[in-house]
Image (cartoon, rainbow over all chains, first blue to last red; front, side, top):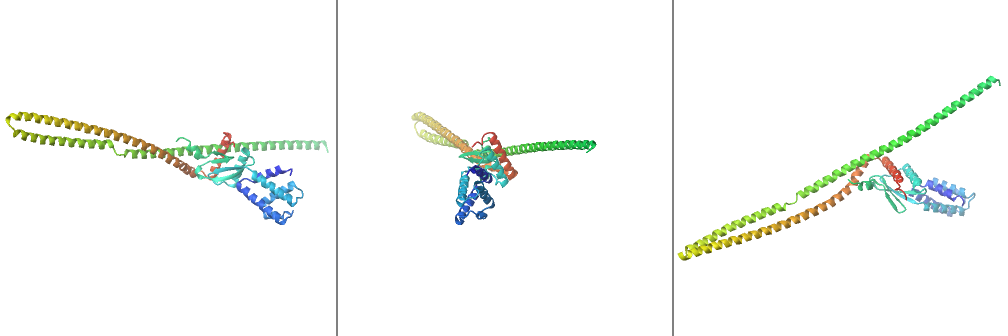
Amino acid sequence: MKRAPALSSQLVSNLLTQEDRWDLLQSLEKAKQLLYLKSTTSDHFLDQLRHDHAELLRAAWSQLFSEPSPSEILEVITLIEKSVNRLPVITLTLTYHPTRVQIKELASFIRSKINNQAILEFQFEPNLVGGLVVQAEGQNIDLSLRETLLHAKV
Amino acid sequence: MSPTNLILLLTSLVSLTLVFQVALAGLLFLSWRRFKIDEKSIRYTARKTSKQLTDLVIDAQKESKDLLLESQRAAHDQLANLPDYSAILEKESHQVIQELIKWQETELKRLHKSWTEKIAGATASSQHEMEEHMLQALDSFNQELSLSLKKHLELLAEERAQLKAETQTQLKNYTEEQKKELASQVEKALPQVFKGILQKQLSPAQQHELVMTQLQQAWEEGILKV
């Protein structure tokens, strides 16, 4: 398990949002069930998972083991689950529904400035008028236009 | 290979190298220029967005100020329509005084008549004494009436002062309540006003641009440190 940090970094780059995290965790759970049922080292069971998740798992154990046994594959899956569950969440409340490209842009900014492993959770609140609210580690940073304008003297 | 050919070959090589260097320099210049243009374009967009936002905020502030003034005018109209207690009181006291004067005249006539009859029926010796009594009685009546009027006017003045104080308190309370109501109305209305203005003018892409600008600004100001 010498290359675990590399695995973690690869995971983070693929996961941007909470939805991505739930999807991957579901795939991992399904992979474990299939592995228990078939008890095989063949990776055909991965075909039943989402393509990118299957690729990730395949790459993960090929990085760590040359010929992994079923127990070693399970070990890798558990390692990935732990890494995924440890990722910190930053909630962004916005006045619009961001596209995937916009999510990537936001994630890139947040990861370069605040936390390089953060995954994003989005909330929609049109009453903010404009701007956003950032919630992370118990802090609430209101950068909305409503906040700015209500505190400005009319 | 003959020396001429060798010279020709070398010359060609040198020329090719020169052409390659010039082309490379050209490419470098073009990419630098492109970078400068991109930088200019980003700055221009940022300035444009900033100006657009400033205009929006100014519009919104103007609109909210109009809203505030309109509400204040409405409150002022309501205050102006409150009943004028002073005028009512003036009218009432005038009526009371008129009635008192009328009663005084009637009572004086009745007394005068009664005494005149008594005097006429009296003996000559006692007429003078009776006239004295009558004058004293009328004088006493006048005094009593004056006191009564004075007392009544004092009561009226007291009532008037009390009513005035009550009205003032009422007006003061009303204004405070009105102020609170106004503040609450304006607070509720402001986001709607701004939201309306922004949604009319900003597309989701522009809203995203605004979010990125605010994140960058918050980061530069050190607000975004979690």
